Amino acid sequence: MVESPPLGLKVFLASPGDVGDERALALKALESLGYDARLRGRVAIETIAWDKPGGDTPMLATMTPQEAISLQRPKPSECDIVVVIFWSRLGTPLPETYIRPNGERYRSGTEWEYLDACAASQQTGRPKVLLYRRTERLGLDPEDPDFTAKVDQWKRVKRFFAECRTPDGSIRAGYNEYDSPDSFRKKF
Image 1 (cartoon, rainbow, N blue to C red):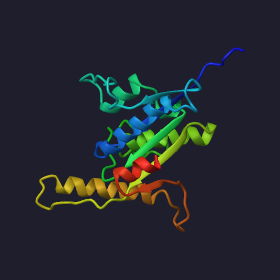
Image 2 (cartoon, rainbow, N blue to C red):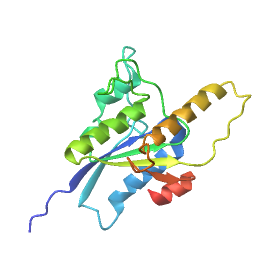
Image 3 (cartoon, one colour):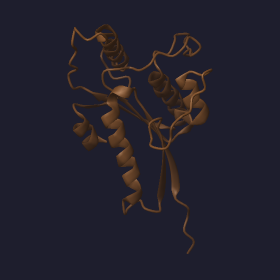
Image 4 (cartoon, rainbow, N blue to C red):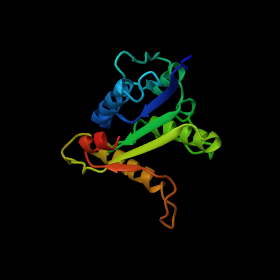
């Protein structure tokens, strides 16, 4: 009997930097799947993540961070599964050269990654896109020198998720809410 090679799956992990705990939990969970007796030898998972240990992305001085990531890693649209996680930040704004098909600018690299994956999924059914939102209250200190920037990021996240609903309140795009990193671990 000839054994078939394992099914290769590329999983893209997208998020701004404020959900580091969740990113670490997702990386650990994806890595542990290789040890699951039901999947061992049957599935090979390659995780695409900018913060994966040993997977640093060198960045030339002439590139934006998103260009460096896109040049050296598969795009979300080229993966099988895309996991997107948000809490209090939408992420770093992209330069004016990153334009949506409707002419608007992408609001962050993470938003670009999410929309790249969703566009491909709508056309081909691949990748499967999982969107997570941390609902834990954000403690903001008005004395913090970055207070205004943090409030702006929080408002961007709220607008992003508001766009997941139509004007009549029906759901346009589903997402998974959780209230803490431990809750994320259990859901993921």
